[in-house]
Amino acid sequence: MAILPVTFDPDPILHEKAKRIKTFDAGLRKLVDDMFETMHSSIGVGLAAPQIGQSIRLLVAELKPDKEANERGFKVALCNPEIVKASEEMISDFEGCLSIPGWIGEVPRHASVVVKAQTPEGKEMRIKANDYYARVLQHEIDHLNGILFTDRVVDIKTIQRLDPKTPEEEVQLLEV
Ligand code: ZN
Image 1 (cartoon, rainbow, N blue to C red):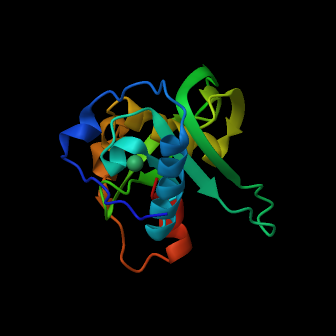
Image 2 (spheres, protein in one colour):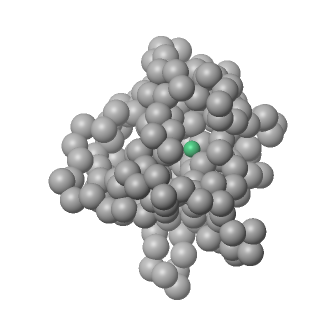
Image 3 (cartoon, rainbow, N blue to C red):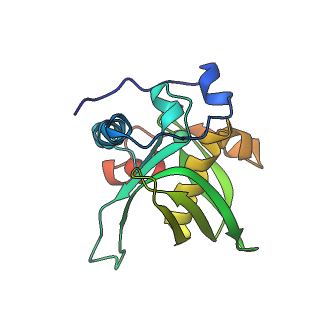
């Protein structure tokens, strides 16, 4: 496994629509492993392929379960993900991005989504995600369409510097 260099805004690859994955081979699965490792090394909970310089429709997301908070956690690697259903209810919350380090902003997201995707083996799958998990998937799928969280911020005054005193767990929840 390898830690890959993260691309930062304004790299043009972050503003392009990524290409569909057609070949599900060992090279793709190695890339998935490398993306998980890169994400873990950068205290993120999600990472999309354009963020490591590859303009393909692939994302990984992982949050360890938290028994105290009764959070189930999640771990997925999705190829060609597509939102096929989204709740009308929107929730606004702060989020950040590994490609825009040190900045956060308040972004409205659908409270729940159903995502259709393929596994790195090419198998069709569907996920129903709520709340924070839904937020992470919407943020990462946006990356595959060349959209950054800063494009989604409704009130520009909410864009602010992340306080350097913020505890690491909280930073992890912001960086997607
Ligand atoms: Zn991001």
